[in-house]
Image (cartoon, rainbow over all chains, first blue to last red; front, side, top):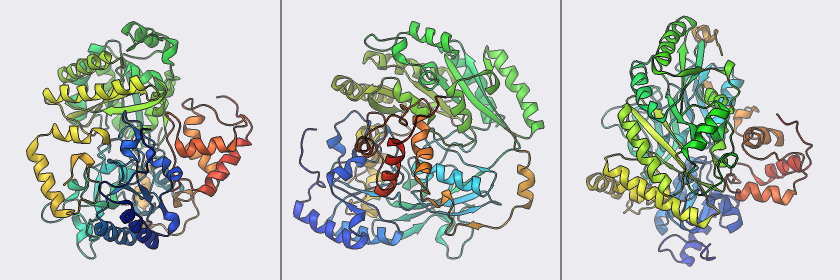
Length: 514
Length: 103
């Protein structure tokens, strides 16, 4: 709290801002234009290790239609005021609902929450930004449609469109969410409405079934970017399999990650295991079991390995805990189960199923692998307490030696700053998202400062080794973008200039600005 | 875990379902305070993630403030998600609730 002055958009005088707000109220109605600081508070709750002021919005607006968004953009272009669109506005640990730069107006699309259509034959859905995973789950349940979606771990209050545009991942066979999206509607900065893929064609009925259309496929430029406001998204749903068989395999040593990855990669690539396998470290598993850190360690710095060993022993947790599932018919799963048993036996792993576990971690993981939303993973936040969290998320090859190297690098750097290695690997198809929750007490100034420095060192040390982030928080957007080199950034800037010459759409998001 | 009728279902299912003004939960409108509690609050506060909040005579203003501002790890909830009237209902529900049996 360094200043009490109300945030304003960069370079915009208070008088101009007030005039713009007045015009926005005419379009949206006064109740949908929020400037009162107390009502803006939910838009400024962040978990990142930077001051709230750095991400304070000047206002929040809640349009409920594409037409309103189009009108709003005309005003914002006129005044050159930047807007930061959010869908369900969660993205906790990546920036939450707060704008990437202080003073931007948050465009909150949560009220646009229609499930526009679900096609049970083609297994597709078309949704608006404000639809939550819970809402979609309820819809499928009410209609008794045996269709599953993939959702991220903290999913009940988050939504599919926002997660997809940030290229989030989940845990079913459809876990790479952008890959399983199909067709977007995007309001461009000049208020044109683009439908990607087949959606551009009048009277097309193939928008949700064929991604590419004719000519360049544009969908990718609207993810992790600021080139347009995505107002509809098609997504593919998975038929619920007749037989779903989730399991966990526990391994006793940290170095086992090498043989785990080598054993699982062929099964994943060949789709014997079709879902996004998770390999969770003991310190990810423990908070969600739940285990209290203070019951095992209250000293300074990172938790020692011997304390982790005691936790593992007391609570029956592996050094690594693999989560995966078989999806098929009883016959195919019976056949594939034999492969799983052989792999576990051959690598020294212990298979755990619901029948032989009482762990809460197992419950939420098994639910996630069939796309049932929950918030079980928020147990992580109790580990250090204090509401500090940023995700450090480098991409790795799905090779054992690479994962061990990344784990050791991360663990050493985290320990240097007094933080625990709370990590997991999410197996894509040939890649792994190495996701580490940098947990710290945000009410403690020193820990907050160290968390910031720690992320910075992690980022640059990994970048030197050629490891880049799959996704990053808004406070570090510029630094993360810089690790990808100048040419990509130059092209991104040219696109920005062409599509949003007044730089009004979330400037700074993913490091893109004029 | 089994859903043996799934494949049979797909042999007979047909027709695009377009949502009208359904009264069901999937309409995107909260039906009542209990639904909000069940589908937002309870995921943490009755799951060993957040503290139990029922049966504690928590003050209405305190509940409201925590919902809107968040509190440490607890996320903040915006009016676009839970509007003022809906929040008033949740606040009443929680502040006047009796304790639930610990699971």
